[in-house]
Length: 214
Image (cartoon, rainbow, N blue to C red):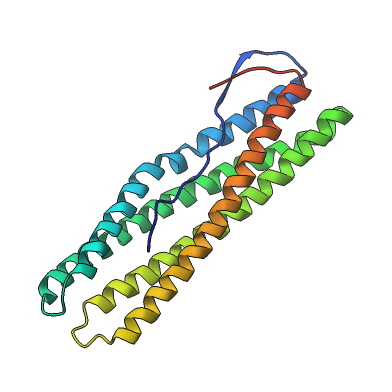
């Protein structure tokens, strides 16, 4: 069943003193604006995790009940479905945030060719990694939406008085498979985020920008 979905976020950096050329400074502005635009994405994680835990608790209560307690099962299932609807809304806010951040990040690419050779190599790798990261996020988002849909089908099944055990087992298996896909995409996204964070630090070092890492 559902587990807490963890995500790793971009480092937040603050310019301590401007050094380096104007190209690097302009890139810094767009890179850090990208971080700012991802803040709504970051802010969704805590309420999202709380809703996941709430659903898990409701599921645990449901499976402890017997078939002659349908009123309780139905009530708990409806509560679980409500958490799913809330998470769908959070996912949309998250997606909007990531799309805006991605649009901002594309502005970075126009500066890469103007860099000196060594910083250019790091910058290009930075851009490539971030593009892969946004692609990985989209895959994660789609997988999670699909997973929520399978969760909802499960709770609708719980509410059926003529529910067959084989149908329940089949849907639970489908839910678990969808969750495995979410975790696979989540791991990929987190790894790319970690790589990007390191490359961004390497880039700032390469262009000799004075920055402070929070």
